[in-house]
Each structure stands twice: as structure tokens, then as C-alpha cells.
Amino acid sequence: MKPAFIIEDLRYAYPTNKKQDVLKGISFTVDQGEIFGLLGPSGAGKSTTQKVLTRLLNDYRGSITYFDRDLKSYDSRFYEEIGVGFEMPVHFSKLTGLENMRYFASFYQKKNDIETLLKRVGLWEYKDIKVAEYSKGMKVRLNFVRALLNDPKVLFLDEVTNGLDPKNAKIIKDMIREFKDQNRTVFLTTHLMNDVEQLCDKVAFCINGQLHEISKVRDLKLKYGKKEVMVEYREDDQLKIESFDMNNIADNPKFISLLHHKGLETIHSGETTMEDIFIKVTGQALYEE
Image (tube, helix red, strand yellow):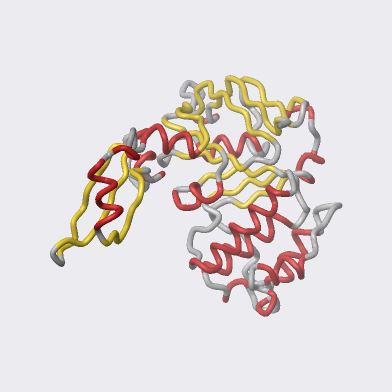
């Protein structure tokens, strides 16, 4: 796959504290057509990384290549190619949803169809209502539409489904997958590990300005999970649980006996969750400050 971003030895310090790097020499690659997840505890450098890659922060050291060119060589036309949906939705509360989208769309040469997008996220019927009257979930969905207004080839998303009910979260995730299927790229930061498991092709953990465990989600689960199978079954009207090592399980007489002679209720592998992996890698709970 062709790289969308190649980041090498990226370092950044905010002007208020030039002696302290927030990003401490991170290197990674985001491929075209990939959903890349950047995970980590609060204050680890995730937002700073996104701001550098979207050119909100420019005084960085190291190199960033964006589709075969130095990121610093791009002019304002760079913003025609990216869509940004950060965690806190920013809209004009005294304008309607439709007026907001028309206003933001006016900044771009290339435009997506606003009606189609609003219908897809369930907001078309509320298009003429002022955003001040929108619920949090409606504002989150409108923020996602805003990120797609210019038909970008790269999406930067931060906590994209936070505050959404399962139905609307699924709509957003389906749209992100469709975006990827068009060979477009998504850079995602989130604390919602369910989103990571369902969406991301590859993830990296940012801890104190450095990256750890850059890997595919499946490979992380294999690395941190247990190679075992757990079986729940009924015996003498009581629920019992047995665990078996996956190695040579087909030759395990007790496992085979359970399959043949007991009423199994559940059977599953010892696959760990992304939340467990997050805690193991970072040493912190998901929402620990």
C-alpha cells in the first residue's frame, strides 16, 4: 500500500515551554486506505500529533511526508484534501444545521452533497432547527458531516462516536468503513475501545510523547490474549466452567467428552479485549487523569 503519511523522529514543544518536548521523537507510517488508531491516556500527546499532522501546529522538528511530499511544502490547498472532526463540536449555535453546513462548505472548492450526508446521519428533518436546540448526539453527528463536506481523502477524527446511542454510532462507523473502502485514509483517536476493535486496521499507543506497540489489532490480541478455550456447560443442573489449552485441544479427551456428552451453553477463546490491552500497555485505566 502507498503511504499517506510517513512520520520520522517527530518532536514538538509548545512555545510556552520550549525546553519540554510533548512529542519525543515518534516515528510511524499511515498507509492509504487504512484506519489508523492513535491511543493513549490523557496528556500523552495524541491531540498534539493530530494538530501537527493537520498543520495547526507547524514549528515541529523531524520530518512528515504526506503522499510523497514534505508536509511543509503544501500551501492552503492541503485543507481541500483533509476532513477534521475533533472531539468538541464547533458550530454557530444561532444558525440552523443546514445554514452551518452551507457556511462551512463555502470554504471549499470540492463539495459533498449536504442533503445526502444529513439524511444519512438522520439530521435532514432537523436541518432548519437552530443548532443551539440540538442535543449533544445531534451536534456530534453534525460535526461528522462537517468533516466530510469537502469530500476529503484523509479524515482526522477524535472521539467520533462519543455521546451517540448504539444505532447512530453504527451509522457513523458504517460511513467510516465505506470511506476506507474507497481507498481513503482515517486517522482516529479515541478512548472507546469498541470503536478501535470494530474500525482500526492498525494502532499505536502514545505514552508520554512516545509510541509503543505499533501493530495490527489482531496481532495485539494474539500477543496479549491467552491461548485457551473456555467452555460453560450444565451438569446436575449446575453451571460449570472448564478451560483448555488450545495446543493439541483436538486430542484432549476431557474436551472431546464435553463436546459429546454435555449440553454446552457457551464456548469461546481466551481472546483479550482492547481495554485490557490498553491498561497493560499504558499502565493506566482508560479515563484516568
